Each structure stands twice: as C-alpha cells, then as structure tokens.
Length: 551
Image (cartoon, rainbow, N blue to C red; front, side, top):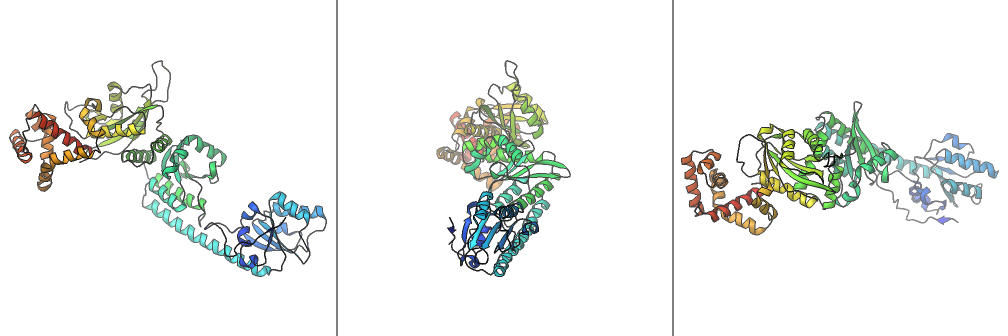
C-alpha cells in the first residue's frame, strides 16, 4: 500500500518562486536518506507548507492556523478509533498541509483509521521507519521558508519599482501590458468595461483560440472567478480602477510562478495602468488600442488572417459576414469618438426596415506620404449595407473637422482580412496622389475610378514594377536629393493635368515661366518628350509605384 519515496534528494521539482510543498520537503536530504513511506500522496503532496510544527498532543489542532506540516510520534493520540478519526478530521479542518508520523516510539505502523481518514480528505500522510531529528528538520525547512519569503519581498520591491517607474514616465497602456507579459512569462490582456480588448501581448499561435468569442469567454470568466482569482482556464483577473472609477480589467493567462506572486505582479501592473488612465483623456485607451491595431494590420504584423480576424473582433470590429472598407481621410482631423458613432448609423436598418447592429470602425494613424492631418480607417458594415457616395459623404461630414477640407480615399469592398488589407493599401495609395477639383469638399475618391492605382497596389511587391519605377525616375530622384529640388513634385503636377499646363503650374505653386523651365530640365534629365502619351503613362506608373512605398 505504501509508495516508497526514493527520488533524488537534491531535486525539488518546485517551480521557481513557488511555495515549498510537502513533496519538496520529502526530497530534502534530511528526510530522503531515511526513505519515508508515502501512504497518502499524489495531489496531496502539492499542498504548500507555511511552517513546520512538532507535537504529539491530541489537542494540537486548536493551536494551528493552517499550512503547517505536522511532525509527530503519535504518543499523545487517542486510542479509540472514533476519537482518532475525529482527531485527523480536526487536523484537516485546521488546514494542516500534511502529517509525518515517526514509527517505533508509539506505533509500529500507521493505524488503519488514520490512513483511511487521511485518504478520504486528501491529507498527505507519510511514515518514517527510522528516527529523524525533528529539530534539525524544522531548522532546515524554516530556513528555506524564510529565504523564500525574503526573496519574495525583494521580488515585490523590484516589481513595484519597475511598474511605478512606468506609471511616472507615462508609459502607454500597451507597453505596460507588454512588460506585464514579460514579467509573468504569460499572455496578458487589457480589456475595457465592455469586454473589448484594448491591448494584448499574446503569442500569435494563441490568437485564434483566445480571441474567438472573447466577450463571451471574458464575461464567463468574470462571473465564475471574480477579481483576483482564477476564472476561465485559470485566468487571473485584476480590476483597473482608481478614485472609485473602474475602467476595465487586466487578465493574465496561466504561466509559471513568480517570486513576488503572480497576483502581486498583476496588481502592480493594474496600478500603473490606472495611474496612466487618470492622466489620459476619457477614451484614450480605446483610441490607442484601435489605432495600433489598424497600424499593425497595415504593417503586416499578424501571423495568420484568422488570428487577425479574431483580434479585430475582440476589439469590437466584426469581420465574419461583413463588408470591410479601407479609408484614408486627409486634410482634416478625424475625431475617433465621432467616427465610432457615425459608423453605427451605416446599415442600421435594412431595406425591410429591420434593425441591425450597424457599422463599426477602427481609426489608425496617418499614413506616410499623405498630406496631414490624416487618419487610416477600417470600416465594417453589415452585408446588406451599401457604402454609396451619399452614405460615404455623410460619414465623412460627421467625423472630419473641418469637413469642407476633407478628402476621403476609399478602397474596394472586402469580405476578409486579406481583402481588407488590400483595401486599406488601395486607400493609402489613392490618398498619396494629388487632389484636383474644387477646393471645398468633402471630396470622395474611390479606387474603382482609378484603375492604375488599383493595378499598382495589386502588384506593389513585384520586383519588375519596382525596377521600372527606379529606372524611370532615378535622375530626378538624384537631382532632388542633391539639390533639395522639386522636380518630382513638378512632374506629378504635370501628369495630373496633362492637357492644362496652366493648372499644372498652379498646382506646383510656380509661375508659368518657372514651371516651363522645370519641365525642360526634366525632359533633359530623362531624355524624353513629356508630350508623348506613352511616356506620360510610363512616368505616371513610376510615380504611383514610388508613392505606394510612402516616398
């Protein structure tokens, strides 16, 4: 019945920073050399030990506070089996971590009622057939426990100092979340009160599994676990709050033990996040989180389309069964709060008058090479919705300030992440081009009306296209770089107004005479005739390739 415990006495198998367990103590040389017999083990050996107590008294239970490993010879135990059973149950009720019974002084073997009661209640029970110096053993164990407590205090001080520094430096929420994940060695998610993901540091391979149905899983975890305790799948949840205001929660997924305690680390991170939230605008969290998400998508910083779709959905932008549009609004300031409100009105009612959830939008940063102020937007609308010119203009007027100066570049309708990424890139390429027409807007530009831009976006990574752009424009690029010139801008203006040199000169902000001098210089440097249609097409394509790279 007994399991002989003959592990390597130098091994503890204890996670770094974790509490000392009954199993760890059994592997200490002071015990391992006498070959203790584990009568009740398995999960019971994982019980943490707070202290070691030596007593043979039958009334010892009332002196214990929980977490003690009791060492005894049993000489004071009651002889009646029923009373002996009550004694063991009393130890369990007192929270004893385990019981080590030395045989020979009073018992030749462990009484059956003791073994059965310990097994019934999952109390670790170990017998020693050889004499052990209890004083020596308690001294060794207490030394380790105190050393661990000291190390934990040092670790907590280090963690407190680190996250206090982050708070005082005004570190953004996503950086604090990243530091939490690195400190804990586990994924960490910051969510809003609405259970939308604000920032997350998660391995790419986990994104689909973790973020699919995030809101449902998060609400379930909060309901089952509560703050500061394990929730769904042992999630650790800590609220982010200060001055009686709560903004959300920070969640750590399962990971290794930490010397300071995983909960203590997460609480320090939550304090740093709350401190930053106090000094930030009302919706700064959502604004930063959504902007970084769109920027990451445009930069290709995602592992799989399904992972990106799950991450977007967790941030409040559904992808499945929706139409997605990439937009760039330039020459006007985009107000994210107004964009969120305006998007909800798109597709809110279908042709039959039925209510729907409406559209959702994420607002990103200004793309490189686009006249500022500007912003990139990823818009998700119901499948029945149509982003026609009237709807698009209404949206732009609601989100841009001043709306009359806004230029909205709209990519193709998309039905998945890959297509949405292409739509975002189309809108960006379109926004980098020159704007003609009336000064007052808002002005809408669609990629469907600019087939050459769509072609460049589709083939943007083709080395032949890149080589064409470089070969065609190299003399002008070198001239402008060496002399701080404007030949590329002049060429762009001329190609935007191929039949009207006066308009081209005006777009270049040059007098006609100076403009013509620039044109003559361009023709000399390139050795081309700019009145030739094929030459114009080739140069226009080369300029679009260069602009698509953000230059």
